[in-house]
Length: 443
Ligand code: IFM
Image 1 (cartoon, rainbow, N blue to C red):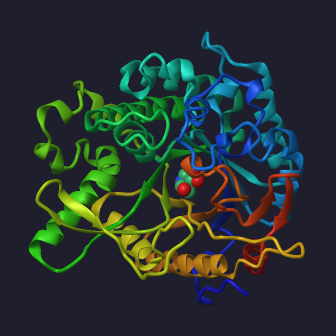
Image 2: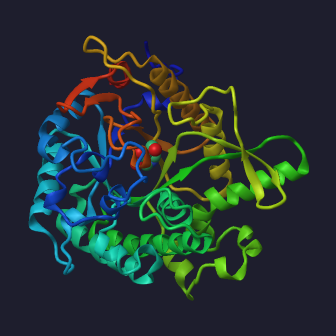
């Protein structure tokens, strides 16, 4: 089974970057060698993780990182997107943890030695617990602590890192973590969701200034996730509902970066839900970025709802991944072209795209044809957007290997490499072979 794009696709050019992505908490394990983080605490809280698992072992990447780099190299990718664990590299007193720094130094050096560009995310959800104990992202001070962490790390690694992203998916940290409580730290209040989002964006802006100073030769930016919103019918009420949902879930995180304000839906909020915004915050948030990272998995369909304004419609009978997310690649093209029309975007990297499937290891093989089809359809959707003028310069498959899928624990497998958690054996799935062959054919 092959991944094919039109022969004239710009994605066949070696100027286009292909990579694979992971995140620290989801793969590293070795929790004793770092500070506790909010996900350790969340996992230890009964009923929060579907299989009652945690990050103690994960993919044991801290131990097996050399083998994992062999794996990455074997795929022939140009780049590897990883995240740095804040609680591994920093100590409680705000100084660097030399052991943690050494781990990433070795990893980065080895990637560079093998010609694989490191794309580093500074925050992929593992906030040190002691900072949460002080209010976490509800405390404005956390934004300044993040900028300090970014400062120390970028002084250390500088432009050995090809690209720094300040945050991965601030929507998930704020909405899932502080507004509906299904992610760490598990708080649930609309006002918390909106205030934490503001502080995350503020932290992004503060850190961008630091990155541009300490590592001006790196590509510096932020990674946002989008779930495009469609209306269930053509009725005016449903179309308006979908637009409100889009403002609330998607535009909330991108509009401040370019337009220095939140979407109009903020005017519908009760006074207690409006975040505290200080003078000058939007000027900090709207720092120029070298790239925008976009993560895409699925779309959502909405209808009008008199109580909340909008409610999501279940797309029963439509093709879905193992997460229950509808497979709808056209939404990827629509998303990219609509963002291109709305904002003066810098070059775009697709920093995550992929699918959880119910994989089975049989006779040493995982024949995940549905995942190959997912990748083929979504790469073609990106190609369609490029043909319509969107400047997409890279694509990362989520994920390199199966890993800890947050509230789903180890029950969902997103990897193109299968991980047998009992013995930590890695097996390339059919999708890994297809991705490798597709990348090789390009060169
Ligand atoms: O596994 C996550 C990742 O950490 C962030 N983006 C979405 C992925 C799939 O849920």
